[in-house]
Length: 186
Picture 1 (tube, rainbow, N blue to C red):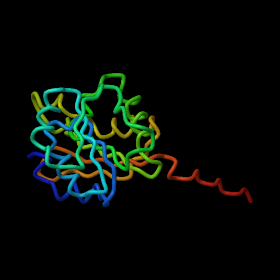
Picture 2 (picture 1 turned 30 degrees about the vertical axis):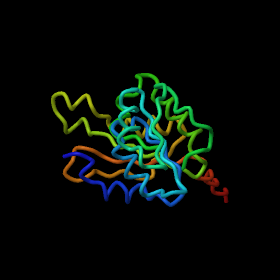
Picture 3 (picture 1 turned 135 degrees about the horizontal axis):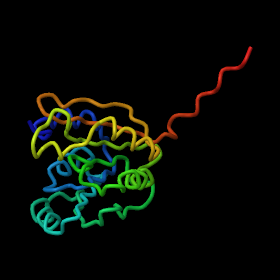
Picture 4 (picture 1 turned 120 degrees about the horizontal axis):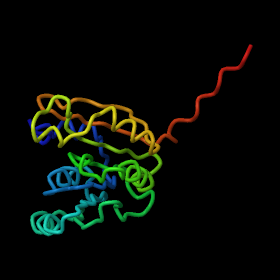
């Protein structure tokens, strides 16, 4: 099963509002960018980031009629977007492609790019129930949550996308949660 078969479930989880700004990291052919562009409407914007120039060229051609979708080439270690500019950072089946040793740094970068009340959403394959080639094209959820927490995110939900071998995990900046007051000693 493919996460793309679960468009409604994913879009519900993303809960995008009109006017939201999204960065789609590793947008590929622009499938999710196109769906999210519909959700955020004319006042919103989807930055469809890709490291492969030919994919960006193809998106520019195929999705030229979508005014609020901007495909662009980006380095592997940054989105090149300004701080506090996005409501959502979205990665579908991309996290395992990030550079080994560079994942936490990248999540820290995304935390700067995302607004203080924004979110990070990652779709990834569960390696534990995959086999063969697909096993390496995935990332353990526990490991992702640890790395995200190290980068200052807090996991607020994760769900298996039914009948696919993929999960969707949603994170918010730790700062959204005030530090719990210590109970007073009696």
